[in-house]
Image 1 (tube, one colour):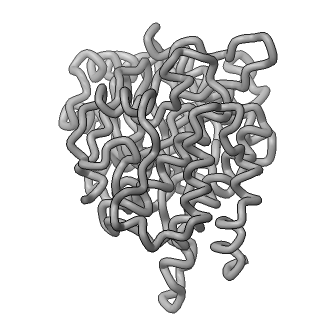
Image 2 (cartoon, helix red, strand yellow):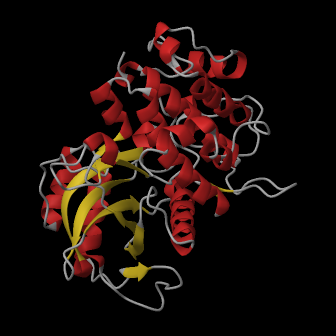
Image 3 (cartoon, rainbow, N blue to C red):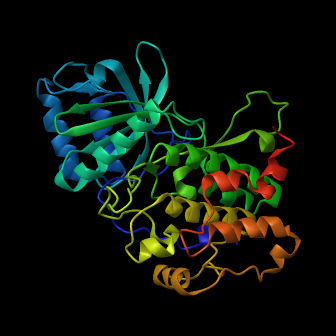
Length: 363
């Protein structure tokens, strides 16, 4: 059963959700008029379009680049002067993600445009701070790159690396199920990204197939797509910083997709890196079986899934699992361990024999 049949309902959150930083949308942009028309066409509220239109009529003195230590008070750089918008890639409650091109360099990027209203402020600030933190730490090949941010007339512009691919969710729908070796190789990329993020004290908080992009890293027609599929984690709108001993995490308002929340998060405990590792276990299970580990029929409601997460044991009863190596199932069990203190860390995943064996032929 394809992943599309899995009911992975998301709760309402305070910010927008990137649908995909992909290249399969034919809607072309280029002017503010086209931008506003596109917003209306995809269902963004008329009120948002009206606000955008009113702001564009102003002189734009508040349009500034905010990047690293640069503040809106120290530099005035117009987003429209730097970039040309091309087309819409995704939409959400308070804004859109668009493909854009840097006018001087021709580099393609993705810009996340979010209205600066009370409901979105906390999430936007968390996301920018986390992305800046990860860039200062050197960035990671499997984490979307951060190019900087602008603020203009009550709208935030977060400029990100453009990824010409499809979401892992769409990738799974296309392939249905993957063999264990291929699945482990893909998961090893995500584990490496989580290792980097967690060492930088960043917890993603909403890891799921929809928030992972897939793309082919080799341009040559002779190279194997399978061996050159790369992953990148996107959408840091639910991000948190690591909890310190005796202190709560910096995120007090939980957001994200509850079907990938770990048992302790469902019980309103602090967000920790173990939350991301649980989600990684769900992803590995889905890659191999095409089904959520707590929705084996693909017909369960969100409440039913969450109840199983809290009360049921992990199952490998499907005949599909008969040919899956024991060490792979052991890895999944270690990731879907109910006790966060015993759950495998990113370091432990990368050192696991199943991962080492699956990746040794391509390293």
